[in-house]
Image 1 (tube, rainbow, N blue to C red):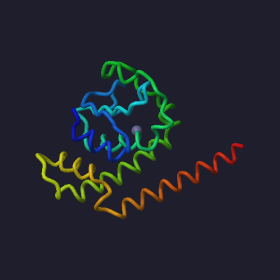
Image 2 (image 1 turned 180 degrees about the vertical axis):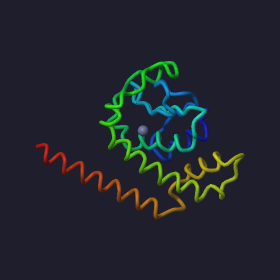
Image 3 (image 1 turned 135 degrees about the vertical axis):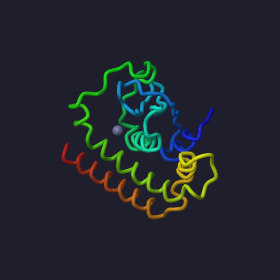
Image 4 (image 1 turned 120 degrees about the horizontal axis):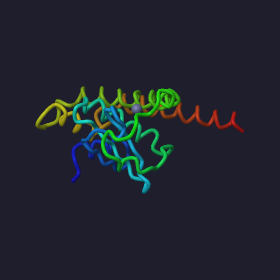
Length: 164
Ligand SMILES: [Zn+2]
């Protein structure tokens, strides 16, 4: 069944994503994004977490870093059954985290601004419906993201040149 989370993720991530409302396989994590061995995208959201914020953050990981994610069977493990990433591993991934936070905050602001235009059962569903339509109503956010992506590409090719 396609949920309202899946629909919003499809628009934000530009690929189909299966969003599961269950604690991530990593112990104590509130959300997680996985790439399966068949190349599918999966997001877990701990039902006890701030679903909206966590969703935006994990969707941003899929949108920005899916190509670099290592495919694995981790998503098949039982919720909370795998040890959480070490502090060192998290620190090594700081660039990825700040990139995800950047995208997430643009989506959050957009959803908060336009949620009232949508009919739904509750605030969360209205925000997700807004994200399903992003960036239709907000040229500024779209331009800001496009500019950010352009800068990232430029930084990446500059890094590649230096590496050569
Ligand atoms: Zn993250």
